[in-house]
Length: 250
Length: 328
Ligand SMILES: Nc1ncnc2c1ncn2[C@@H]1O[C@H](COP(=O)(O)OP(=O)(O)O)[C@@H](O)[C@H]1O
Ligand SMILES: [Mg+2]
Image (cartoon, rainbow over all chains, first blue to last red; front, side, top):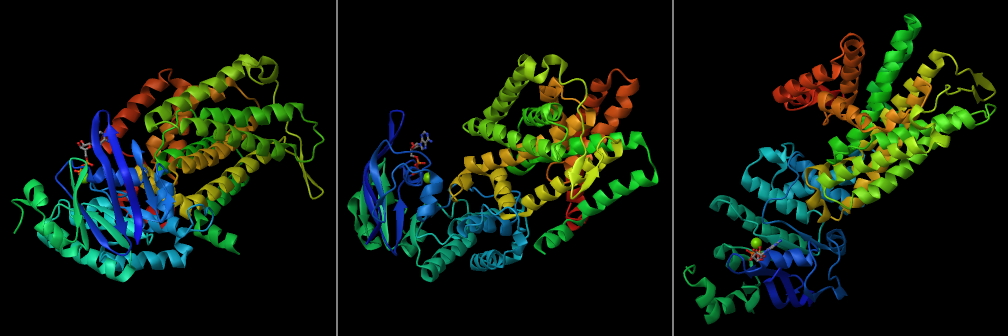
């Protein structure tokens, strides 16, 4: 069943169409990867769906409901969370506080004014749970600006998934990571997928990662969909080989 | 019970209040009472503003608007209310807070439509509107003279007790209590989940939108809370100087708490309080015999900020764990 349907989505920046008539759907309970060269419009899809800016035309349906043009905070409340290609964490807050921030909202406590934050046991336990899940328990008290790039990327993803979203977008989760860190991220994604049942929609430049985690792959090129299928099908696809995969293949 | 717990967690407020209330008994001195009153009022002003600047990351150049609304509400009410009202002073202060809160809601509603830099400009513009209103609406505000003739302080009648408010000492007690209770409430809010949401907005407001937070709405709430307590500070200044003056709404009044935050620190709750002590003390001592007070203070600020890059308590908080332990 489709959890997210994007219909004829077009996004123009001035005269440049970053997306032209994109139609795709994301199936529930799968890891779908979105690939394509730089500037293909991958991030723009995320931005439009999560309400960073409205589409020029087209519709976005989440679980049967039209969410086109809703503000970001409302889209989040519907159950779609995202991480960012350019690390977008809370720099002066600690790792724990970063994760906790997402959980305060998720647990509906963001308008509690009078009880000290360390008196909420459920909040603390959930935060620790996520920290364990992402393997940053030992660094929980470090300010985010003092941890490594790889760890910051993990926090970036941790913030997005703390709220147990139904659908999560990960925009280049391994951007700038070394092979060791990349492996950690891949393991994390696989583990999360198995333990939480969250639906993933990931963009990724590393083809090894893409082919190892995805149930399905969508290829985007110049704002248009070039191919859509299982990793096997994409592997065989002549258009994709010509336009994109060509030299990258192992 | 829970309130007692909160009080225990912030026991420094109690210590501060006790100290301030005991000292004048031991060493009665009008000069001491006067300077401490002024420091406390300005500290409340600065702490309220810092909720917005230090904790939420929005700079307001127009907080004098709320200070003046508090000051004029209290001044006008006490000059015109019947002196026989049993709770005239607390009532006037409360009305000042509510009105400042409402004005903050309106100003906040408009200013948060813009990006941070225009937010700052627009707050300044709004405060100038309040200033102009005060100057022009002479029949009500006394125009550029302000509310002269003194502000009466009728006794507070409570539980059959009549507390004479005309003595400087009883006013001092009122100021100490009002300011310390406000510190406590603001500190409790800062330590709450809401307090942590606004810190996250300060660090990265854009990301908060993608975590289900309507940043604009939360910023408006902070402005209203900040406005309410700034209004209280304004009300107290009217009582303290026994008058309300256009000066309370002038843009230089908005700058004073900003100086205090710069000097004392904005990442530590007590930073603006320390700043208020230093700035008020310096101006009291220097301005009396040096005409060039502004020049000296400005130079001091430049040198200080070039060297430290942060307020005093911010630096100390980085260097020692003491401030964290004391929960300042
Ligand atoms: N905010 C923006 N303003 C103007 N142009 C943009 C904006 N965001 C993206 N673009 C343009 O849209 C195209 C697609 O960008 P993007 O979605 O970031 O690609 P990808 O994530 O696939 O690398 C690029 O040509 C980019 O320059
Ligand atoms: Mg991108």
